[in-house]
Amino acid sequence: MVESWDDFRKFEDTMNRMFENFWGRPASRHLLSSGESGAIVPAENREPFIDVVESDKEITATAEMPGLEKPDIHINVTEDRLEISAETKQEEKKEEKGYIYRERRSGSYYRAISLPSPVDPDKSKATYKNGILEVKMPKTEIKKKTPLKVE
Image (tube, rainbow, N blue to C red; front, side):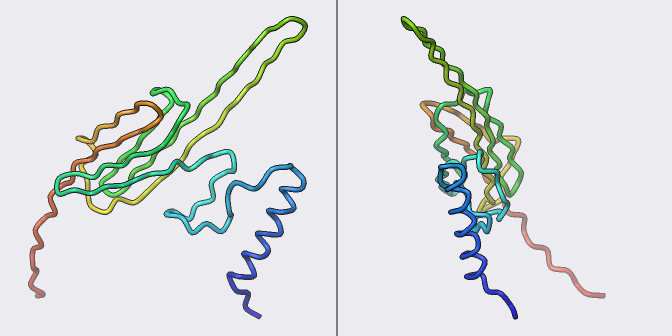
């Protein structure tokens, strides 16, 4: 008997509920992803929301990535793909009369998307301000098609 994707989704939902009951928090990622790459990303990674805008001359990607410092952000651009990753670690310590409060947080971001048109990675530029990452990637000219004669 051939199983359908609905059966796999039901199984996944059952497993997510089981892990939620065990860990006390909801699962943050579906294993059967319908995302861009279809890759399974560990639960501690967050996928930033990305807006991609294409104009005649460039592609601009804007990602929400709050709580980071510029050196923590890593960007890879190829002709047809944008990959963004970041890792943050913060420690907060507060001392008051009678007790010490200390909290550690860590997290990471990861997102890879295919671009709608070829870009020039060498001329691409990124800025980060107030939790918003903006990557501007100039488009490359589409090379003229050259017909070939079959010999």
